[in-house]
Length: 156
Length: 156
Image (tube, rainbow over all chains, first blue to last red; front, side, top):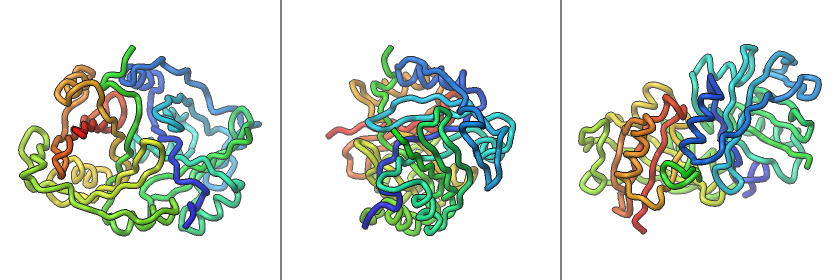
């Protein structure tokens, strides 16, 4: 047996929040760490965000990260109003845990996505990192895995 | 600054599911690992489960665990029909990610709970491990942290 996306290590737990500044203040207090900066995902010229197979130039979100383990981050995401996996989650579920992420290894993103699709997952959103250092894909895996799975590929 | 519960390391991500056998089969396939056994939490004589401040002798669930990082587990939870944090989540949210957990260190459970309560969290459920090797407390932290936080204390 081998992992479908080349790894069995969760590298991120992602939360959707309404007010990233208020929520990261509370998480920093709880974890006993410095409050991280929040920054936008990036500009569409770089991120090339696609949501449900369509270009989504307006979709964006503020992000902030906490280290919560060896190789594990907690990610806070405050979406803007444009349709995206983040905004849809907030509209449909309210604030809460949106995804778990895996750093894909030993394969490129198209192959990882194809393997997930073969397992019954549905590509929901994808884009490049705002600093052009890699890319992400959100696979909707609610049917079988009961969550959204994010695939991350770093070029560094 | 120090962590409110003595650690900033997430040790578990907990999912509520309807059919633990079906879901753990899919997760095992995705992760490329052996399918773990599912087992009941334990007998009330040992677990002494309390839900919302009241004894909950009927509350129970099947649990299965996957290792998904150094010190990180993915936990699948199939609740029975009796009221519990697990059953309530399933009724109100459907299947999905229910909690993140922290192994408390350097303090006992009552102190950890008190510190969380001072931060505005609400004790939702608690109990002893089914093998009497420790205890857990679910703190409702939706208001500020946007999730349920589970505290784990092992006597081993």
